[in-house]
Image (cartoon, rainbow, N blue to C red; front, side, top):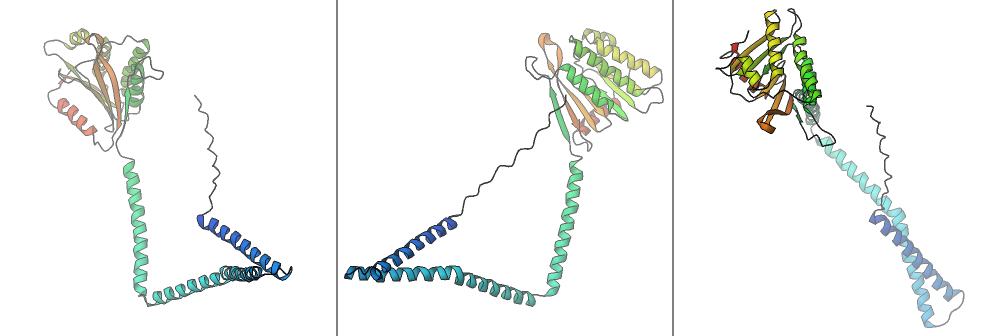
Length: 324
């Protein structure tokens, strides 16, 4: 399925609000202009139109006074304040330069060297973290969901994913098989995926010159032969695969099969000592064992995988008996 490329979101137009200082300055200018014009207008009335009376004389003088105050304020704001600012900044720079001249030059050089060293160490640390990050444990979980859901994971999906993962093996595949096996699958698609998984395991081994080694531990009852035990548990598909493994072993291929007395209800696959497939089981309808989910864990540092590695080796090198 081809995904439609998503168009990058357009950058929203950013509208910046004017600062309060800008607004206040605008108001001051407007009020100042109004007062200045008003003052000159009062003086004009008194002088040009010869408005008589003591009140008009007072208003005329007041208007002249206000106009002069506003004019002085604007002259200072536009000219003198900018000059004072430049003078202050210049004095500050002079003082800083004088202070730096008295500061020991060897300390300045040492400080620069320390900064360069710190940058170098940070760069090396970043590379180490990136390298470590590439080797950290990564886990994914697939869970069988209700078939009525619009997007679901089925047993067929889990077997299909397991097949994909074992195909990536380069050296070894070690499998520990649960005592409680899932019963023969009724779903046709899941059956095909399970058969593909089993056949892939054997095909990866190839002939006697194949480089890949495939080992499996199965569990059975002491009182029953393996074939009888698997048939009683309705696991004909597993029985067929185990018989095929035994045949390959007798033909000299790197297929090895051992068994222990049944006790562990878990199944896991170790691929190249770097990846773990851990099957999670459940008891379904009628008391039959079913696949519930599977963890896919990439663990090249063996933080978690080592526990499964030790479990497998404990039985393989100890009490497990060859099933030839």
